[in-house]
Image (cartoon, rainbow, N blue to C red; front, top):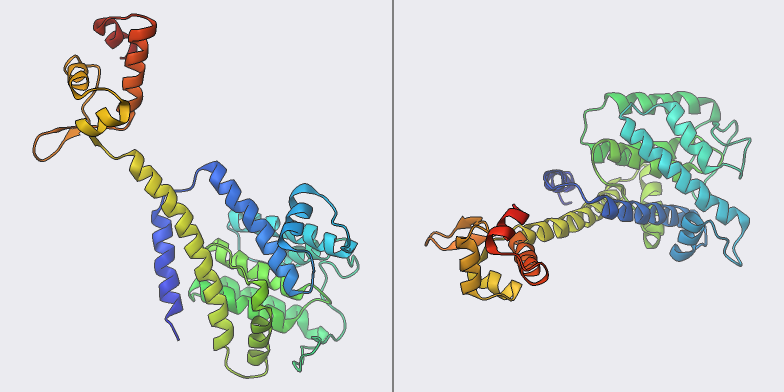
Length: 325
């Protein structure tokens, strides 16, 4: 088994060292994540809305022909519960039983109002599973015990997130919506620790459910944990790729140009650039080891401005220097 926790911790450290994304790019990623989490989490539970259809419902408020009202409401509810999860993470407060109940309330909003945000009061079974779930009387105390563990454990955050999810679905505290609530609680733990949200893909549904059942029946939990760790790893890779692309773009912008490169980029001759530099119109950003002048990429814009002032306003070098200083 790979040393997942060490790998994930190192990737998070790399991500932490990178600069934050521009606001527009951050919003684009957030919008994508809201739809993707909603689509995949609901699909695991049998919702038949496609990824594109989920986006129409969540982002546009549109209805999809041939899909049930329940499926539409499930998409709306999960998106709202995800927003709550993000807000809880931003607040930085300890995870409480009340927070878990509120996430669940949003998951079942307008679907099962008597059960939304309330612990089950009777026995339940997981369809097709041999797992025996706790007696309903024990559910509140078991959930409080889980919350107490969450607030006191010192384990690695990704391990805590995976175990929190496992413990919650094993308690099965609700009549319905246990899986969706547990996955959001898992991601709440991850977000609070500075990790991106983990997405369990639709095509992993059987592997995911089988690995859970295997652990719940007393077998090894390795398959389950590897699946969750791999999901976190994918999210980290995605964020690193986006942040890295931005960093590469920023780095390119900050590259310094030799006079020949500047001449080629600006369409001016080297002699003209030398003349303008000597006249004080173009600042030198640095020098090579051999003593050659270097210019910032901003010099390209400055050159275009100088030429514009010459051609349109007929300004002298002295007047241009005064104009752009």
